[in-house]
Image (cartoon, one colour):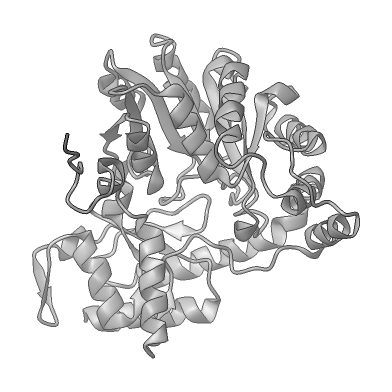
Length: 402
């Protein structure tokens, strides 16, 4: 009997078909170029350039001194789940009990868990474009089929009820979106979410994943709204959140869900066989982060808002850039399709990936191609950087394109 490897490199078809994270890949490329002596300005990663607030760090130090070091419950400390329940009620008017909460090693793991426990092979997940880079591959890893719904800068990169209805098939099982959106910064209003929910009333088999990780980075134009706050969507919506963005805690790796009990308990079951409980010290610190008022991190939001105005003004001064005004998060998502088919400084630009690579090589600025977000007309630029870095980066881009 002979054994034949499924693939030529000895790895599974699953991993061979997996697309590397474009944001992490560009960040790694930028680090590599810096190590080689290049002066690279990195505007590719979605990472606040602030330190974790002292009151949160103090809680972690206290946890260390209190000898928290043992394995944690798979779905999180009871006190942290209580803090999450308090946060959901205070900020989102959603009532959960502890059995509906699961704490994970980052919101990314939370999303992965949900896909794994809900999707069967061939079931479809609607993804309004642009979407966060990992959604599509997380769906594929669960044997699901991503169904992209195109949006454009003209409608602020938001899916309409008519588009949602048209995308639904007998195989549709889930709808995933982020609000505020990574990468566009667009926010679905309560009225817009209600209109989508009205469509979903005709399709009770569809579970919604509402990724609200940027909830508190909101510039006051559109009030944050949660799909699960609608009584008729509560039992079919998974609300995903975490502390990485608003609290400058990207490396602490704590995310969580509030969900229908059957989904939450299934995520707990899966996580128990994978990572088990999240880091003990980080969990203790997050209790403090969530119990305290979100106003304690407003200074970061205020600074991001100043940078948003700065970068929009600079980008709008570059011919060929079209920007919407992001209402949340810390990205701009300019449409640069006017450059497609053109040759700049001897380089022909055919798509957003070509454009992002041109900017990296000719301006020494790292951005992310819109192809990674399901929208090939744009690039994502993070303004989670100092004002001096933003000014220098955009000046370099403008010079390279002139």
